[in-house]
Image (tube, rainbow, N blue to C red; front, side, top):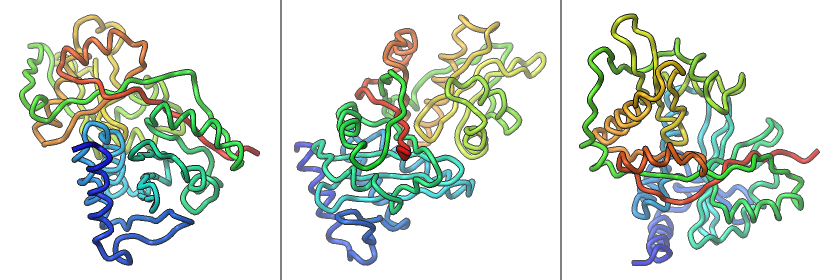
Length: 304
């Protein structure tokens, strides 16, 4: 069955719900999916893996953080005509993800135009992992709605691993090291070493460490943290190894350990890396990850 045919089944199932209990109208052709229904919509998206993995992960992980940390609110909106979905996280950190069956982005700019879906008065929103064709569409469409895009000339490649593969990964910890979950006291070092870390990301990093799956590799001798990786609200990320401990395979170890933990829990590991990071991509492929598609991360804000 083709992808667009399967997504039509999703639309039909949603239409079979009582519309008053499923969603409320926001603006023309756009409806908010009520919070209690978001998990069922996310579950339908699993039918179309791996194409929908990025937005599925965004929805489920940010909804989880919203419930557990209270720092944000996650909402899901659907276009009644095209079936496009926009997931939005508002509050201490502001992100959005977009998915459209058949690559039909007509009407997306209407959703971005005013504050009914995106509260632009609070500043920039990061569009997380959008397809390259949507990026090109937005570059053309945003000036007409008073918005501008903020982006680096960076393209990311997205990878995934099936839970069945992940849960069978064999990870042997060095005799003089041990694995342990990160704690809130590690927020500063993780945030400061993350390529995109800043004062604005501290709350998000703290929430991820406190409420999501993380792995650190520590020395037995003095419990020094030497390598770490986190299951973030955009997939596995923030992988880092302290300078003096590099070239020992520790990054690969923590990556495989976290993937194994996610697999054991029935979750699907997903990650992104810069397209030109050939060393990282080699590690991912050797570990069992499979390529999905190239993506971009883009900021959008009012063009004042």
